[in-house]
Image (cartoon, rainbow, N blue to C red; front, side, top):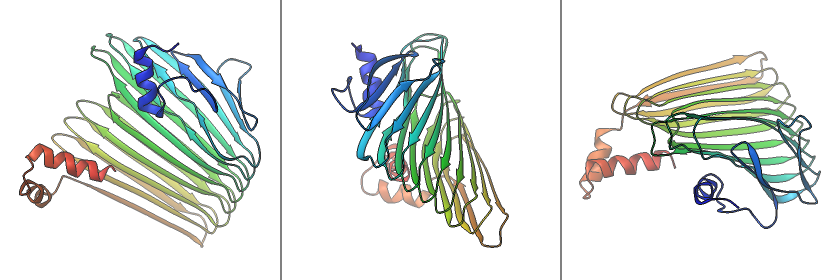
Amino acid sequence: MLNDIVKNLLSEVSGIDNVPLNGAFNIRSNGASAGRNSTETIQIVSKPDGTGIDIIVKAGTKDENVHIPALISGDNMHDLVYNDFYIGEDADITIVAGCGIHNCGGGVSQHDGIHRFFVGKNAKVKYLEKHIGEGDGMGENIINPQTHIFAEENSYLEMDTIQMKGIDSTKRVSTAKLAEGATIVIKEKIMTHGKQFAETSFDVVMEGENSSAKLISRSVARDASKQVFKSKIFGNNACYGHSECDAIIMDSGVVIAEPNIVANHVEASLIHEAAIGKIAGDQLMKLMTLGLTEKEAEAQIIGGFLK
């Protein structure tokens, strides 16, 4: 049975509020499994060394979901897990991951999730990952996700990540190697406040002809928080790559963008964009003339920006 704190975390990061009755899932709570189920087409098995799980999706699987949230409900905990996803050819699935930390103590609670995706030919994956932190103590919440993608011919992976509150420090690492015709789309939304720190690192190698990558980061840095965005795209064949970083800074926030593109083929088409700035005064004025306070107007603009 899950207690109320864990149920709330589960709902926040994955949209479910208890152990499901069916479908494929693995719920990790305080470093141990709190529930698991496999289906005929999606098998979830523990690694022999106990470091994590393998999620094996049968070739041709269509329109199925798998939930793999990780939850921490105490302080002075360091949870490290290695999860590997083997997506069969022609499969089409949605994976709901994410991590939630509830820390009411004075120590550090940390989750490091290292995920590898082996995406088969013509397979399609949507990967959803949400991170939150909460607690009324003086402790620190740290989440360091890593995602490593190996995409075979004509496969597609779309990854949506969200971090909006309560994470004091995060280092987010994503790498990808793309075969012929493979496509990845990675989108992240981040808000930091107080003295929080967030670093994003994308490293994509497009080896195959007609492969493509789109990396999109939208973020808001408030108070005295700091964010660093790094992206590297290598075009080693006729391919298309686009890196985009848009950030709003407020108060004494700091945002650093370091895009890097390398074309190693005459037919490689690579683009990077970075825009950092404050909320425009005319936007605030327009909303305030409609009866909103300045804070309400700011909230509306930020909500639209991060939507």
